[in-house]
Structures are given as structure tokens and as C-alpha cells.
Image (cartoon, rainbow, N blue to C red; front, side):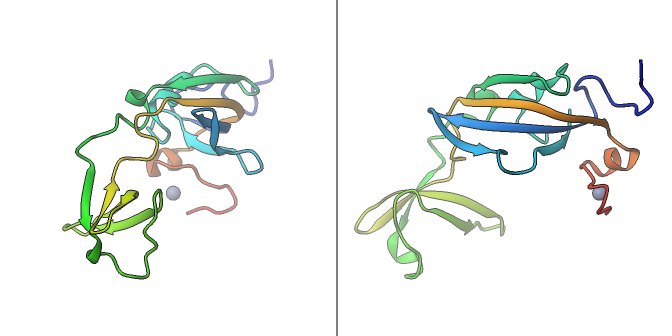
Amino acid sequence: MNKENNQPEVVKEDTIVSLDYTLKVDGEVVDTSEGNEPIQFIQGRGQIIPGLESELNGMAVGDSKEVVVPPSRGYGDVDEKAFANIPRKEFPSNIPLEKDIKLQLRDDEGNILDAYIVNVKEKSVRLNFNHPLAGKDLHFDVTVVDLREATEEELDHGHVHDPEHQH
Ligand code: ZN
């Protein structure tokens, strides 16, 4: 058996995984690597959602799998407290106030928060601060494109290095 390149045979902790994926929610494609490079990540570091990561262990290069991730292992349930009614006059007039538009707001500590407009009333705007995929079952179709061992440096930094652009 030729093991000279030391390629891991299957996905396991600290393997660098290159993964093609398509994510469907309610039957619609919401994200895909098709037409792009596969995503790369260090397995076991929580760099992808936990419900998908745990299903990848043991997969070999070329293996495909369909994985359904419930909200509890994906983006969480919808938090009914993560909605807010903001007076319309607090929005600058150049911001289009329409349903589903994504806004970025700064909280009191200076953190940037993403919010989606739920509806626009005469005097107020209702915002949803939940992740847009909260409460959704996530249907992934994944294919393992490549596997390699992480380098010491990658494990140290906690991210994948592009061999041509070290940092
Ligand atoms: Zn680095």
C-alpha cells in the first residue's frame, strides 16, 4: 500500500477537509460550493456547524452523503425574544425599509449585529435578530474532495493555510 504522501484515509480530528456542499432549506438551495472552490476547514474545531461536522467522521475522498441537521445542531431555534420594534424615526432616511432587508446595527458595547426587517409599520420597524436559518432543518449534500493532515502551524493557528499564501 502506498502511504508515502501520508494522506489520511478518512475524515477524523485535525484532518484538513476539502468539501463540496449544497445546502437546501425548505427545498430551496440557499448556499452551495458549486461553481466555486470547495470549502476547507480543520475537522473537529467547530469551524462548520456541529450537526454536519460530526457526520463527516469516517468519510473517504470521493464519498458523498446527505445530512439533515435539525435546528438544535444547526443555527438554533427561533428565539422569540430576539425581535425588537424600533421607532421608524431612528433609521436614517437613506436606508430602504422593506421586508427581509438585512441591516447591521451597533449595540451599546459596539458589537455589530445583523438584523432582518420583519415588517414596516407607520411608526415602527420590527426587526428579527435571529440567524436567518434559525429554526430550520438544514439539508446538506456533501462530497469529500480532498483530505490531508493539518500542519503543526495550522493546528496552532486554528485555521487552514493556503500553501501559496502563508501567514
Ligand atoms: Zn495562520
